[in-house]
Each structure stands twice: as C-alpha cells, then as structure tokens.
Amino acid sequence: QVRLVESGGGLVKPGMSLRLSCAASGFSFSDYYMTWIRQAPGEGLDWISYISFSGVTIYYADSVKGRFTISRDDATESLYLQMNSLTVDDTAVYYCARGDCRGDSCYVDHWGQGTQVTVSS
Amino acid sequence: SYVLTQPPSVSVAPGKAATIPCGGINIGRKSVHWYQQKPGQAPVLVISYDSDRPSGIPERISGSNSGNTATLTISSVEAGDEADYYCQVWDSTSDLPGVFGGGTKLTVL
Image (cartoon, rainbow over all chains, first blue to last red):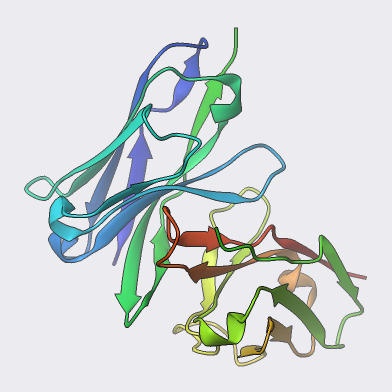
C-alpha cells in the first residue's frame, strides 16, 4: 500500500534552515508528481510546492519562493524540501503528498502523517 | 490567482443531510476535489473530479458542481463525519496551480 513518511521537522530559530525528507513506498514513485502542503496551527491547508515526475516542472507558492527548494530522488524514492531563512510564519505541520492528474486537473490521493516545524526565538 | 470560498462552519443534526458549498468564478468549468480532515489527522480524499468516490468512501458522501458553486453532500450524517472539509481545484493559469478553499468545520449536533 502507498506509504509516505516525513522526517526532519523540529524547533529552529528565525533565519535558520531545515531540510524535510519524505520516504515513499508502495508505488512507482517516478510515475507521480509529488507535493508539499502545510498547515499552520488552527489554519487551513496551504499548498506550497509541487514537483512533476522527472522534476521537469516545479511550482512554489509566493510565500516560500526564493527560500524553499523542492527536489526528488527517484532512485531512493524520496522527496525533499530545503527550507532556508525560516520565519515564525513558516510554523506549521508539513505534509508530503502524492498527486495524480487526469486531463487538466490534479489532486492529492495520498498524504503522509506530517512533520511539525516550529520557528521561534 | 483563483479563489475558493467556503463557509467557516456548518451544523447538522444526526441523520440529516449536510451540504457544504465551495464557491468560485465559473467553478463548474473546473474539476473539484474534496478532502476530509479529522482533528490530529492528515486529510483524506473523499471526492475527486466533482463526484467520484475513492474506494472505501461511503455512498452517503457525494459531490456536484455547476455554475459558480460546487457542493459536497453528506446524507444521513453520523457523529463520525464531524471534521473539517476542504475543496480544491487545479488552476493552470496560476503560478501555483493547486488551490484549496479555506475549509468548513462540520459539527454534528
């Protein structure tokens, strides 16, 4: 069965960096686009980055553009999110998720359990 | 960028039907997907492409989409349906195509 396991979250000070990882299993990782979605405390879902299969297409939300970098390693079936210059507004649960697309629409069909990132001085 | 609007909360008595709207300009021309999130858990896909139910999702949950409003309907609501529900579309004209609505908290009275 599809399994997505995030790691790398934690408590950091403003301005510091973190690298999140997501280990995928149970499906052909290279055939799917992957995405990171976050959820601040008490808030809704916030789609922050997406990477297509083969990494050809990458999107970022304006709120993280220039600070976060998404990447994937199809050989190890892993997804990454390098987060630099973190601010308190980046405090959230970060979900790794698998996307599926048909026609002109894409959606998330599997989610990891999330990893907590807390940015505080 | 494309905006999806959901009411913050909807309340319904057990056994009654709950309808959760998701508004967007000409949303009927897009495919809408719905997620359920219970406290402390990751979201779960409950409806894709307006009205398709993934395996394991009960027939009580259905979706429709027309004009400027998509709707998630839960017939005969149970206590276990209490959760946050999010609609989502893919807007290819946006810098980041994935767009979520703000979410609706469904309370079972």
